[in-house]
Length: 254
Ligand code: NAD
Image (cartoon, rainbow, N blue to C red; front, side, top):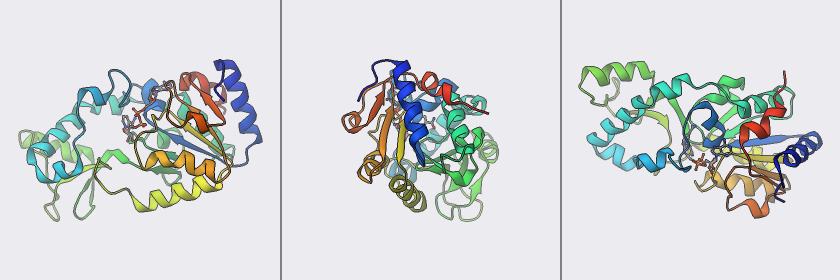
């Protein structure tokens, strides 16, 4: 059912939240656009400006690694300045109220942690761009360390000091294996909830986009909040095609 207007959508969502015992939110880039971080697929989004660099290209090509870090540092002011939005804060309120055990996210911006979720309560399907890892031995690096090396070496991406393999943001690129633990936990959460809320995702990036249907098939009610239609709207119990901040703002509590 598509909510006819914002008010009736918020009312219906409020009823569904009140009736639910266990709510699992699933978030995409749309929850962070009001925080100043562009999404991928909206007009003017990152997708239209830069073709993503697939993992095999990052591994094979020094030029691709340099370009990938150049792009990351070009976004640093945006990521560093971003604060949790109304959507993040509403989910954090429901988490504190004991309704939301954890959030599954496709986002890499760390804003759920910043809003009050403990790190182990944020299931990051696509990793996190606020730090880096060696792609060989998995050693973690702070971005400051990468930036210093990058600047000292005329824009050349650094390798790991321990094993000399490339260092990459701790994100999952296209063509890179999904993180097993996170996939397992997201599966368990999707199958155990009675309300699953997909927020700000175009639901086209797989396998992440499989979780809403997994929850629905396991008996949960499914809500989709996204200003554009998605392919899964027809199976949802409630579709709210409005701004996320406006929709979830009323659920921001203490
Ligand atoms: P997407 O860009 O494919 O889809 C975002 C959706 O959110 C769009 O359909 C858009 O219409 C909607 N949207 C944007 N702002 C909205 C708002 N204020 N209210 C309501 N709807 C809004 O994003 P995706 O499905 O998350 O897939 C993109 C991939 O890119 C993700 O897997 C993620 O890893 C990565 N990414 C992450 C970030 C981030 O961490 N903030 C930003 C860009 C891309």
